[in-house]
Amino acid sequence: MKIGIIGGGSIGLLFSYYLSMDNNVSIYTRTREQADAINEHGLHLVKHRIEHTPAKVTAVPIQEWKGNDDLTVVAVKQYQLDGLISGIKDKAKGSILFLQNGYGHIKLLSELETAKVYVGSVEHGAVRKNGFTVQHNGLGVTRTAVYKGEDDLLRELSTIAPSGFPFILEPDFKEMLIKKLVVNSVINPLTAILKVKNGELIYNPFYFEIFKQMFYECAQVLDLPNREKYFENLMTVCEKTANNHSSMYKDIENGRQTEIDAILGYLLELSRSKNIKAPLIHNYYHCIKGKEHEREGT
Image (cartoon, rainbow, N blue to C red; front, top):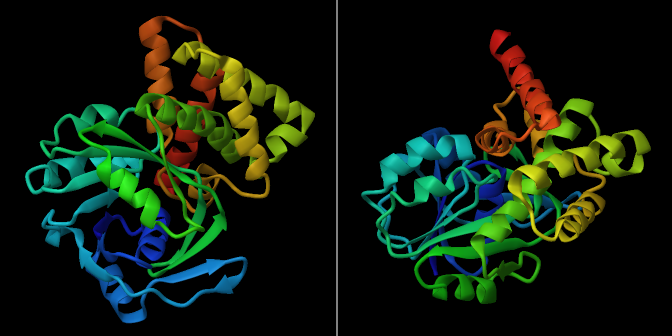
């Protein structure tokens, strides 16, 4: 399959490395400098402290994306998506898979005229070490679902993906994204502000009280059916990633913009529209925004 991957961050590099094993992969980066570095060095993957054989992919600045790939995987942060979609919507010819956190980006997808639009939920842990090296920390799966069109390419993707990088086709994109939204809403802001690894949220009994209350507020705002199932999934993810730092923790630590607006910001807007009080969502949203404001002031 001819696959294009937009985004040279940790997820873009991770997907480019694994999918290049059996596919023709092009990665589209924000800067020409990163594209040149990838073309010169190849893509490097570090897993279990071992550096694997570099992968050969074609790296090109995003401005040169033509939309001719069989499948384009959009692996940028949600706050970068608005500007990106306006730039690619007239070029898109093949299928597009979006890998953003949160749920607010769904309204942007209606702007795309291409016949097949997919969304995904990534459960891997990854950290970009430099412009051409990614560290694969937490082994997981990528869940995908159809937003519009047929699911044929998602089925093909699930069969051609390497065994250590599985794809699972889900029947309902809304349920899939809401499940991930709940996980991100509880784990990410709490670990970022408390400055702890994911597992501490459930192993420390005092943090666990906040963890449970934050889930309760999310469940209220989202009007979740079968809350026990969502809480069980949240606990499972927290246990599986116990030794990891969340992406929001890493963003705050490294002075980067976070995806808080796509996560708690979305829930905050929803709570206001429903006239539901959500004090923890409100407070942790503003704590993270405050950390971002500190960065801007330095």
